[in-house]
Image (cartoon, rainbow, N blue to C red):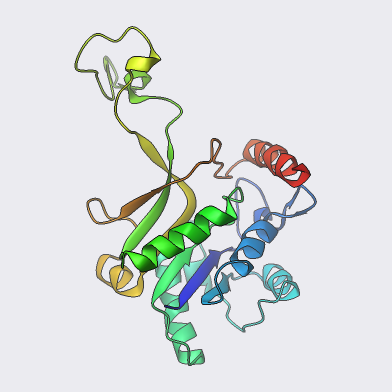
Length: 233
């Protein structure tokens, strides 16, 4: 099985200008995702999708030497990642003799990953012949304590079946999609136009306690603190 490790890194960013090349813990943000992708199975092919010449040059400095550039119409704030994935897949298949069976989406904005977890997820995906697998993390805020508010009323997202006196009574397994990775077969992507489909996608529980999806500068600072701690271990 050949897997395209798709790394989306467009040039535009409103929250943090130049986000993908923003320095964090001694390297550009993009470094951590490319570095991990290069350490995966030999049949996992790192692929950088960008419309930006500086980002492309940085990718080449790390060994990603293809000639692909994402079209501008697929690199706007409103562009869907799945459209960029399908465009890149078509380009790759026309430019290479390697047949791609699945796509591993690795977003640079989620730089905190555990290499062994991603490797284990790929192995499980192959052995179980899955069509779609996504990384999830246990919710820190339990739904018994989360509320949905309207204009004049509110309600809990989830309610216990009986009286609860402490967190030990918080039952149920609740997760969120942590952004670490999305993995799906090419056929699944073509049929569903998405990596995640309720009732079809399998869950891979990550051991990460803190998962960061960087959108604002504050997120970058939190991620940097965690990365620096990991580098010292």
